[in-house]
Length: 128
Image: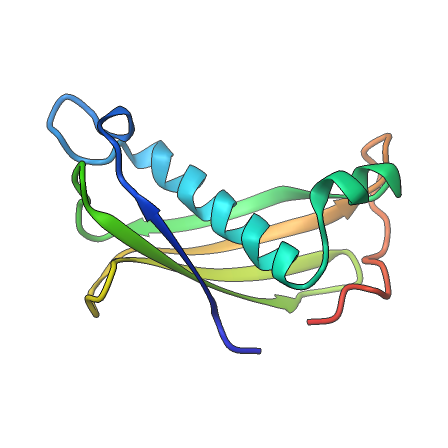
């Protein structure tokens, strides 16, 4: 499946004292892009909650290559694949909008859990 693209703007609140995006805030951008990706497949997190099935982050591997600054527009490319009966693997890339160089690359594993936090199989309705 091709990558889904999500655009966002960097605000002053996203930056640190040096004027660059604070590293933990990139995780917020990645999360928003994953949420949009799942919604593009018809999977809304609120609906998942009522089905008693949730997707939660299990592992994150990120490389911070270049900084982003306040006022810049970023593009987050996201693609996903089934890693097991319980896990999805997301490959994500953050770039300045319209530019080829990656600022951050990430591999994020998300697991499917029930209301009590127990592993459950990814629903058949999730087609990647």
